[in-house]
Image 1 (cartoon, helix red, strand yellow):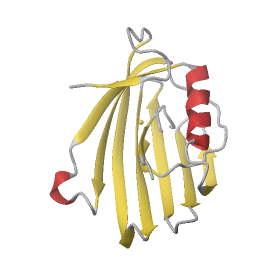
Image 2 (tube, rainbow, N blue to C red):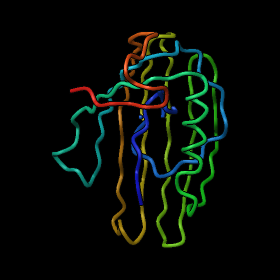
Image 3 (tube, rainbow, N blue to C red):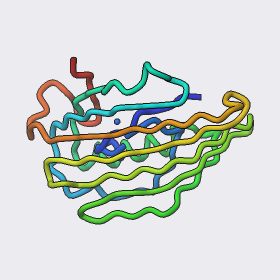
Length: 168
């Protein structure tokens, strides 16, 4: 099973967003943010990482309205063997949040919550949490992330829409 880091605007920037298992997110409109190059920092912690967790991962991504929609579609089809539901979806000009639950035939279960705050059309922050249980995690594993994203430029340079690259 693969996990994906989510960061707005990939759900959202939201979704280069925290580690979630194949969330199926309803088709939502792009948030009221500037489109172009965004830099996102995600700090991930998990019960399995111990003291190795807590280091931020920073990347830059290029977003257009179309690449936002495509990232939503990719996320929805990433794990076709999982049965996922999304609930409590709330989106307005200042916040995007939702809960979800996924399960797979081998017994893996994931519950999660994502919450992003749109500070302006050039900045956002948020968090996510996920709890995984099943044969691979007999004692359950909890993952949390803190996400911070900022607009860099309307010119994405060499990063194509929908792509991202690590910042060192």
